[in-house]
Image 1: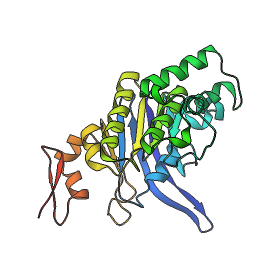
Image 2 (image 1 turned 90 degrees about the vertical axis):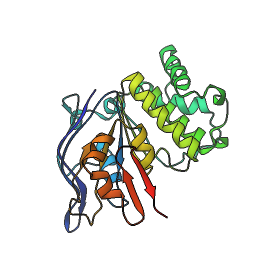
Image 3 (image 1 turned 135 degrees about the horizontal axis):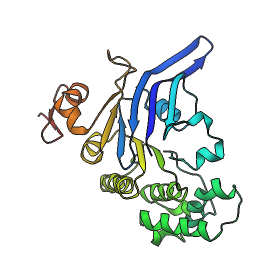
Image 4 (image 1 turned 45 degrees about the vertical axis):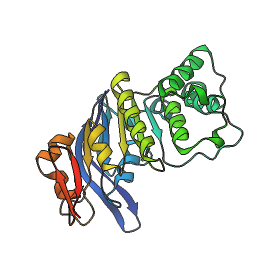
Length: 263
């Protein structure tokens, strides 16, 4: 299920008027692909992600899910189409992993709704897909950062949405866990034909695992507010990655999709 942006403008309403962060973006997120959003701090990644997830309204343009404007979705209906995994650690006590994953069924049962057989099957499948069966009875408060992120992804999978947005899912993870997380998200996108979109600062991991990249230039760049889109290899070959991420002491190899530090 494709997710299309048509001349989307993001930003905020202030007392002095509109503050535009990104301007007239036209792009498509495709089912079955992992797309990574890259850019320096202050470029507007969080604003764009929040707008795509319908947490804040756009200043202009439209967002369409399979050809339908997301503004026409009722909240519960939208929750059955879009899952969101945020960076913030859930502050929960007295809740087991399975109970947390089961909260993903709330768009179908209501917040305090009782799970039926279909709901329990969805929870079982989500736990198996992420590979956290051994954590099922653990208390969420006892989990490591990596384990907690997997639980929140399982919760989004239990929600059974065709689209999943993630805000910095590899933050706070050690390197092996970052790699495992990126490979997991790519596998889920491809095997389940989900549209998976995430913001990240892990540039090299994104280059090696993402199907597509969205690049937001910094606020001081001449292209600020625009969006550069392509596969990692396309953005390497046309010089975009070197332009934005190479610099004094850093070179970029477009063939290997790798940055080198010069001593």
